[in-house]
Image (tube, rainbow, N blue to C red):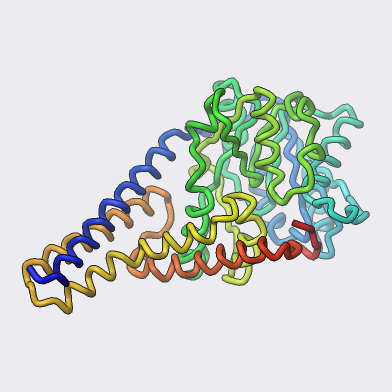
Length: 381
């Protein structure tokens, strides 16, 4: 067999084994998540939604949250110095549903103080001052859409697991080809190292919470000093998880995909800046290198196919073609299991090239100590 054909076969086989192993690891991570079943809310729950220029998201998603009929539900939206119609949207809904209340934070945070944890801390302090702080708090981002039964399901899972905080990653809503190509790939690269089984384990240092949705025991939150104790970091959610785990408190990650969804970004520019602000903080300074390695791996089966096509060994070419097709099938099934579109596997190197651009840029900005720009505010690294 010609050297070119041998190289093509070797590359195709290596790519298939590596991608099948990654798909198996992804299934194992999903299998370790706590399962949720839609359940009515039966105990007091305060949902805190931090909002800075979130009028459009609140208009779309707050009515979905209020479909929960329970009288035990209270919703507190923190308007963190918005310049859009955030306050007006909340006031209108509060006029129709007495369970909703608006808290306005008008002053800008001090230099270097991150806006979101300050807004969350203000909400907790406000509820406590009113004597309205329940045993459980749900911190929910405005871009998360909830299905009926989610709130009760979260509370039941927390109680059943004996946990002090419960979080997870909602299903990704992908409204364009650009989002389908790049968002799931970047998310996978950033969160692929998170092992739910180790987060759940009492004797493991691994800690992770996703700030899009965190249900927490209010006494446990107070025990670790609340939101302001996490420090000035763009990853206040992960920092909180680490403080809780260090204090011997129990964390759980749940499969939220059936009952919660989010559309994170609507353009490549948005995801470039959105993921870029916390990529290094979440995945470490080597995240750019990891993305380039993933890009190289995604190119390997295509390179093998190209080498087979220019070679003159028909039987080797047929085997490479079969391995290539099997590789695409494994990738497609893995994406279907993750509940994201499968078709990007047909151009997967393009997805990884875009992800590498996002993450390499993030690593460069981190190395340069460039300030983080987010929602009209600037924060030091």
